[in-house]
Length: 354
Image (cartoon, rainbow, N blue to C red; front, side, top):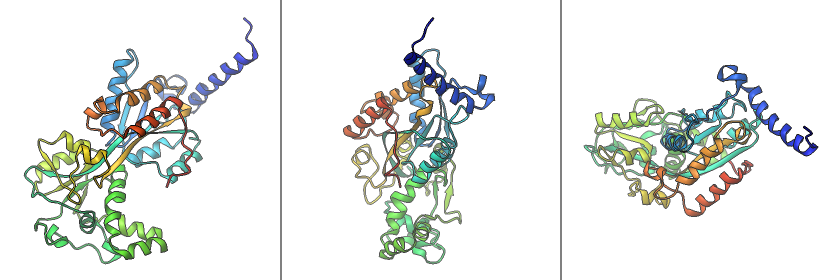
């Protein structure tokens, strides 16, 4: 059978794409290092939505294996995602914050050149307490002064009770269960709450201009004397700890607050509760976008990857499965733009990353 030059070129290009993935692969992951199962790593906040999409994927694609979803934290997932292209590297990074410029550069250095960024929805950085809790109401300034290692660059934090921080609060011990440093939720806590509280001191703006590293350390480094407890990447564990510690506060994604309304109540920030409406409109101070990042080089080589992305785009609207799982839909224009990204597989240029 004769094959014309154009057809041969197309076949060669397709073969090269598959072979390049296989060549980079871990031989233990399948014949020739190939992989027939989607693998995603990253955010514990995005995890329940990624698994919901995986369930729909299996229902819609009989005979195909369910995607493997790992809750590694956004930061830990980025390291795995950016380590390279090939069967031993994940296809997708689930993220509760946007990719950092440093992470993008690391991806590029390791050959992960074409990255597709998709905003799948919105989440809130929720503060919560047990139904039997004291009914706290906090501000970014109060949270910062309670949790900062060295508030405003001064001596080590000596505050023991919430009343020590603000006279209007009860004299109960500061006890906060929250995410680890590898988590996107921890990054959101730093950016959306701690830095905002820190900047209430005008001297901090001057410090940022003078020394960015010192500013970051001053405004985002959390005390390590037991008042803040790193609770790992399992947000359900924080929910359990709040049940056993009625005076404690937990920090996690809004969806976990929604799922546990029978045992938890919201701790308002600036007098604004974390609700579906306040998060979706951005009125809530802890509102944040949720993302998935995908390697374009894996799109043709890993079976079902496009179909899995389509599942997100088909179910992230109001009333969709992801919303029913607790994710807040992004505004209409954002959903439309990201649906087009899923369809066209437009890659991220990284120019506006921070």
